[in-house]
Structures are given as structure tokens and as C-alpha cells.
Image (cartoon, rainbow, N blue to C red; front, side):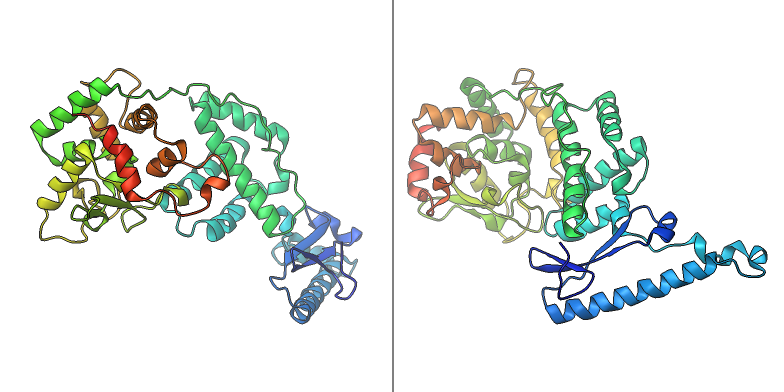
Length: 389
């Protein structure tokens, strides 16, 4: 609803927005009947001056448009290149998908890493390839359904289709809210089978883990150190491959490692930041890493996978999954160690919220987020129960 004290404005969440209806005689220049623009202020005085300036600019521009359309002598001899009626200021209601993407990334990309930006750009590129590059309000439900079908025809699994749709919807919703646009999101609620084509990751049996760990000691190289480190810690592959030597502490009463953001990689979620006691083969691997780099203090623990200054989790996954292939059945990958760790801790009668703390999994209830969590000593006690002798 428009405010009464400051003409041509309305307030949303405490911020002022400029809003002006396009005159009916000039509507053929526009794609929408109203111009809306954030004034980016909560202060009445600033909002009033900015609104007055925008209104004045519009009145001046509309006067030029009317003059250009007026029936004046010699109008037919005017050059089309100078015809003011051929141009019009863009309404924020007709913002393009490319402009919306820029707004989204400018506000949301801070600290997210390259993959966040790449995923957003890829999703918008897929959309433009299928439905064309349009203004947001021009996309229809039919475009959304065609987009869904095209993604499925590409061979994308249901989970991948979901990620693309979630990204496009997020861009629509964020831009609409940021600019106070009244847009219906045609990509919301589109049905597709999220489980289609998704292969279930299986846990690695305990006997197989024992065989793999024995092989790691026999070969004793950096690739096997990485496998061993993950096998008894439940680390994600990117978390482990992106560790620095400073993240590893083998001299404390409870040897442990710190899972925290660093120059090589961010973490999947805020809850992923944690401290994990080192036990069994994870402690063996950590000692091999430290003892092999005594003159280093803050370098990458696995330089093989951080050559360009950022962890290459895809390269690590490809090489290590190939290494595992001779030991595991189809459906098991490096990520399966996390599934196995959860089962092994359950078998050790470890409390579920402690399991979540070790693996950096989201807690099941709000109450479990209160407090500082379990001590390293308590975590070490349960992790020692799963060590394979």
C-alpha cells in the first residue's frame, strides 16, 4: 500500500520503494503497467528526496515521449535513430533473467565459493537454452514444464533436476523480494520424480573396511593416508582433502583435527565446522601426514589435490573411487565411509546427537542445537569403540 506522507512510495520490511503507475497513453512503451524501484533507505527524509527526484525524471521523460508522438510538422522526416518513441526506461517489473542472476549473486555469493556461482550460472543457462532469455514476468508455467522435460531428456537424475529448479526458483524469489516485484513464480511446485535415476550409496561392510585399511598401511602413500583418514573419522572427501597441516593436532591429550573453512575450501554448511578426535587408522594417517611435513606449519595436508590453491574434490573422488573399486561392491564410493561410520557408531550405542556432532550432520531438533555439545573425551570414548583391531 502506498504511503500518504511521501508521494509515490510504499514501505516493505521498513524500507521505502518508489512506485509510479505508467500513464495509459504511454503504456505501449512498457512491458508492465507500474514502475517499482527500491529507494534503499529506511529514513523518511532520504526516501522523500529520492522519490521526488525519480518522479521528476519520469515526468520529464514522459513529456519527451509525448512530444515525440505529437502530430508536429515534418515528423515524417525525422530519423528513426533519433525517435524518442523507440526507447523507454526499463521497468523493474521486466528485469531480465541475466540481470536477476547478477543481483542474486551480488548479494548471496559472498563466502560461498566457486561452485555456488557456477551452479547458479549453469541453471540460468539451461533455462535460457530451453525457454529463451526473457524478463522474469514473461516466463510462464508452460516454460517451466518444458524446462523440466528438457532437463529430464538431458539424462539428469531427479536430484539434479531438483537442484536446478531450486536454484532458478531461488533467483526468482530473491529478486522479486529484493525489488518488491509482484511476480508469480512459475517454477514453484513443478512435479518431477526426485528419486528417478538416483543411485543409493551403500555403506562399506566392516570386514571390507578392515581389508582397505590393511592395504593403506601396506602401500603407505598420500592417497592411502587420505583414505585411512576418512575411514575412521567420517570426514567428507572435500573436508579431508582440503585440510591444512595446522588443522591437525596429534600432540594434545586427545589427538584431533579441526574441520573449519580455510583458503583451500569452504564447508558445506555452518554445522559442518567441528572438532573430531583422531582414533584408529585416522590417527595413523594424521601422524604420517605430520611426520612427513615437519618443516611445514600451514601448508595443504594433501598438496596433490590443492595444486591450484583450491581443493579439487572431483579429482580426488575419481582417483580414490578407482582405488576402492577392487575392494567394494557396486554402489560403494568414498562417501560410503560416512554411511558406514554412522552404522558403526549406532552399533556402539552412541547417542544420535553425538553421531550428528561427529559427522557434521544437521540436528533433528532445535533443542539439540543448544549448548556446546559433547567434549572431545566423550567423543573419543565412543569412536574408540568402533576401531577395527
